[in-house]
Image (cartoon, rainbow, N blue to C red; front, top):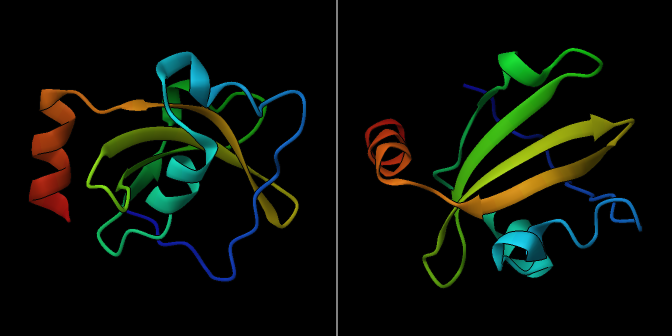
Length: 97
């Protein structure tokens, strides 16, 4: 498991700003999940060919559980995708958090 160092700064640009909306997730919800005290973060070993990618399981202020794929670009977090977590991931989040 990995923990994030603060402060957290996000990189949102035309290449990734609309990606969470593909799964009906708002940008602010994605950012809220990173500040969940019980976040679960692990390496995405299957998709880390060109850059290290990570998976975060976290809860928004409205208790929505999200599955977020992200990477680091210099000192900023760049979100690659975000969606609701599935039943299996909920169990993992609850057991690990």
